[in-house]
Image 1 (cartoon, one colour):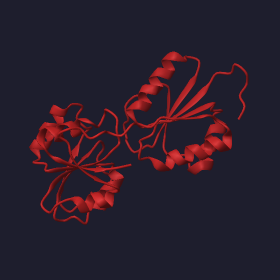
Image 2 (cartoon, one colour):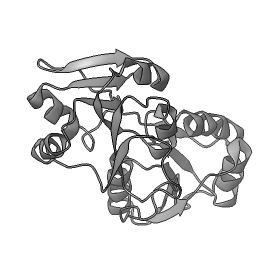
Image 3 (spheres, rainbow, N blue to C red):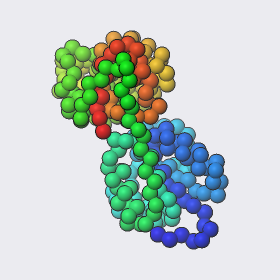
Image 4 (cartoon, helix red, strand yellow):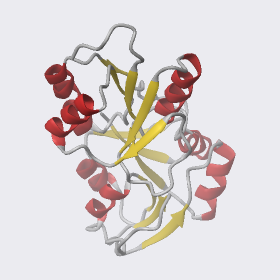
Length: 230
């Protein structure tokens, strides 16, 4: 999709991660003439303030994203989504080919296991569910859309942390709900794990700094982490 010579850039960031937010701030600061649009999935009701413009919600598949690119005269697209957001990443590749817009893919490196980490590494959430021992007290550090998969484990007590209250009661038979964002330090996460007598953590290897504090806390307490690989 050719653009006019010397026309201001319109940059579409497929975001939702802390890295996407940092990128938006950087682009707005370094390219004041550019239009920077960050697209969010819309799962968080009150997302953090972002630099530039913000849109929320899905595009309607590959064609919907391609239509948005054309309508907004996007000149560059950056995929800075969560590493497990496979569908939007696949759609971005196809939409970039359809429209001819350059696509920059920025994927976080996964966390690497360190001395003292007790990881039970699995491939998929079903395997994570089956890896939990009877009687465990588990911090489910997952998106709300993945919680229902664990409903069959009536022999496990779950602690679920969510930013927003769920629209419907959680399907988990034995659980406690905590509202709030993850702690930004290992000390804060350690207090949470101790207060709720957590014995296991279930999370995905999303990488990045924002969610790593719980991994550090688990290491310090010697707790096993059931780590879902990419």
